[in-house]
Structure formats: C-alpha cells, structure tokens
Length: 215
Image 1 (cartoon, rainbow, N blue to C red):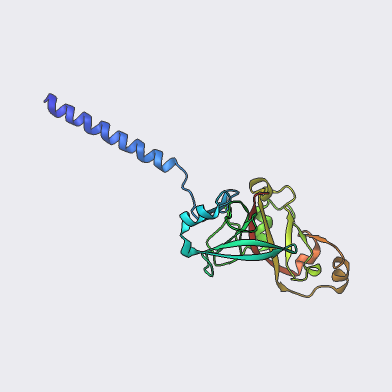
Image 2: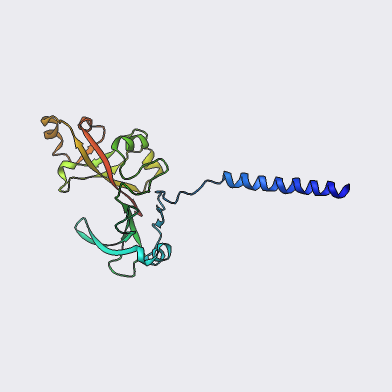
C-alpha cells in the first residue's frame, strides 16, 4: 500500500513539474523571425559583419554591389537577392572585408518583414499615422525630388519614433485624385511636407522602403 501511495505521489509531483514547465514556456514571448527592430530586420542584424552574414544565411544567398547615396558610392550586400525576402546591407567600408553595417533596408511589399505593430513595406500613410499614435509624419517633398519619392524625416515624437528611433523610410504616391492647382502651387516650393496637410486628402501614399540605421 505504501509503495502504491509513493508511486501516486511521485506521479503527481512529475505532472506538476511538467505543467509548471509548460506554463513557463507559454509565458515566454515568441521571437518573430521576420521582425523589424532596431537590432535588425529578419535574420540580418546591424551588428553583423559580412563574415557573420555568411555564417547566418550562407554565401549563396549574398550578392555584393554598390549604391549611390547622396552622390557617394556605397558598398552593399543584398541578402536573398531578387527574392521577396531581399534585404540590403550598406557598409561603412569601401572595400572588403566589410565589418560595419551603417544601414539595413527592405523595399519589397511582398516581403514578410514588419514591426510588432504591423508597419511594413506596402503600409499606407494612414496606417503609418495610426501606428504613430496619429502624430503627423514629416517628409521631404515628392514634387521637389527628382525620383518623385518622399523620405521620412521625422515621426514628430509619435509612437514609431519612441519605439523605433532607428527607423526611417521612403514614401510614394500611388494614386492622385483631383488636386487644386493653387494647393500644388503652394506646396511645390516647400522642402518638407507634413501628413496633416490638406494635400493628402487627395493622395494615396504608401511606404515603398523601410530602413534601420546605426546612426
């Protein structure tokens, strides 16, 4: 009888321990492998050197190249080139070995990467404002840039700036409805625009690039 009681007690103890372990595992937040954070985007971290990238994703998933940024030639590495998951790493060095990433960016709206709130390439400007606690977004002027894009300059103290001080992006006009000519004449000379301007009542704008920076 004592033996049966001991076995029963042992079974209860083991079951209790297993239940506690399962509860602890359930309480641990799961890490999103496609998260955009100030540490990195998906599998690519700002702290990675080229050698670390090679170890993380494999040399066959890397493609070196260059990009022109503010008139300067910057050396880059594309991770998963020509795929929806493509990520571009910008290097501080102008020749190999590349050891210091200055920026990581994504520009494919079919990609899986997003912030915890849902901000991603392809998000509308209205969604960006929502994630930013409805604070306005300051951007360069579409109509003053040769390429027609607007660069996000500030989130003006909103939630995005608080949670992701490293984050910036590029916006594009997807659709333009009837805009008063006087409104266009008013804003064209301006270096910056705010998303609260009445102009945006006639524009559909989306995020076409997101970047995190070490600066």
